[in-house]
Length: 639
Image 1 (cartoon, helix red, strand yellow):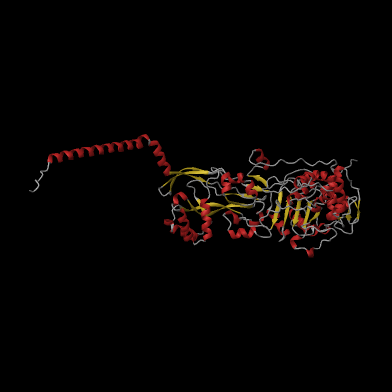
Image 2 (cartoon, helix red, strand yellow):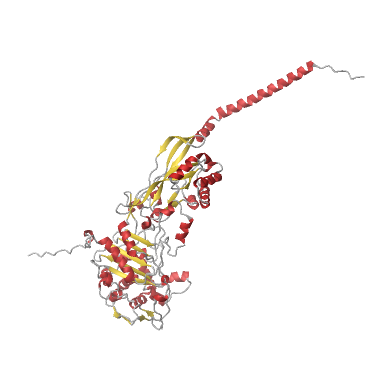
């Protein structure tokens, strides 16, 4: 039989549907309550928190880097300024896939793979969040146009106008003023992130580095309203940055150029100092380089060419170059002999062309192999007689030599504000025992007395020692800063704006007349018939006190003669000369070192005189009125 047909229970279905509707309505009601509660929590309970977040997404604080202080020479000629430049910046947080954006920049601007590597390195460098990072400087008009056309492909990328450091005199002050460069990661860790917000450059060498705190200034800020893409809509608040202080240096552009011209294309250094103040008038290290290459990032090839050059243009010979001073220190040794009473003006030594220690066969040769016969101090300085100073050094001993020469700054930093100055070396018993673990030998004292052996000095130290002789022992540390805005170096130190080394005590001799005696002997170098530099002195219209020197580069065996034809050019002796003028009232002290120049009197002395002429003489070839020595007082006898 067929199965009976079941009748549908409509009442039961209706109850089921009603139950489901009630449950669904209850669930919807509960969800609505949860949603309302959440809205209440967000809109009422956490209103302050979320309104602040929303405001922060709309309002941004942008740092305003301060203009870097300008640098002038003593006559107001600008030697470091700031020029506007268009830079390409990228904000990583707004760029999305920033690596892909960098690829697009390289494609749009038709740049090299090396540029792409450099861009990525710059972006990866540590910086504050949402801070634009410059990747390319000094954009051309064509590059700016290409960026504008492809802006839709370059999120987070902007063309920004910035002030970039520029050195209008280029190579002339590269070693003294120095240069700025991009802040690297090591520097970034040491810097105050607030003070350097928005700043991408910092002083690397020279005055730019030593006076970084003065030149940098104080950062300013802007509160700006931005849209969702980060574009600035309007400025809400503005705080101006405080520009860095303008610096006026002691350097003179005309004298600097004159010193460079006198040195020519030879490798070497020239330092000119005002003995009365310590102001550095000229500071030349040749060869030089263009510091503008380093400001926005020097290319690999350009840097490799400078770094690997055999002439070492990046090397600051004035501050870092260490050379045996040779005979330029003989006036200092003479002062030590006079002040200790070991010798007097009439003390004589017989020179057969060499000197021997008692009971020692070794002969310490005089440069004049034939000898000068009997020589006193005047003849010894004017003729640069080695035998006399071998004997004097032996009588003084290394302990007194070390003590006296150290008073003149030999073997120590002498400058007030020069970054990277080397100390040099003034040897002593203690130094040799500590470094070489050996005793001091008498023969080492002899060669120390003529500026050879272990002794090493910088051209700046020789200039300072010469200035001390000219200034009769009055110490003024050599300095490059004349003033910062209206503040003198002393005021800067007093206000704690600059840290400076204390000035050494003045050199006080037992008899002040010793200064004049040695000065007179140095004048004989230039103006007596037997003086080593009399050919140069004969052409001077003022009195010069000077001293020549020759520094060995390679040792010569006992009994052999110096033969330049057998030596490579870079193995030949260095030529040195120091001097001050006018001798009666010194206004300038000069030290010159010519690498492998061989003859201090023949090569370095003419450079010294040319520098002095450029400073002391007017267009008429006579002493400028301000440099004329005071006229002697006329004695009036009453009738």
